[in-house]
Image (tube, rainbow, N blue to C red):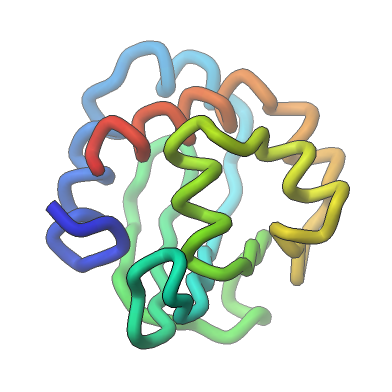
Length: 129
């Protein structure tokens, strides 16, 4: 299954919903998150895509972009960066601090304060691909 397609996203959401570890670690996260994945040859993506969800319940979730005003947290990066993060080759905190992964809206403390949930989220995303 190709990463960042709608099919991949739907499978990802289903895994997140049913993963007890993610649900437990995500308790209290309570934020809507939008991921903007920018086209990138390294990431094998020919057009920008976006998807998002309310964490940790993953409901509502959506495939497509929303304005920054409609969500709590916006993460943006090239497809290759997101693929490296989901693939375990790049640490999400390091990607954020080096600017490879950009926090376009939200508070980095919200992410780092929920690092267990964030790391489980990333791990599950990599399992879907």
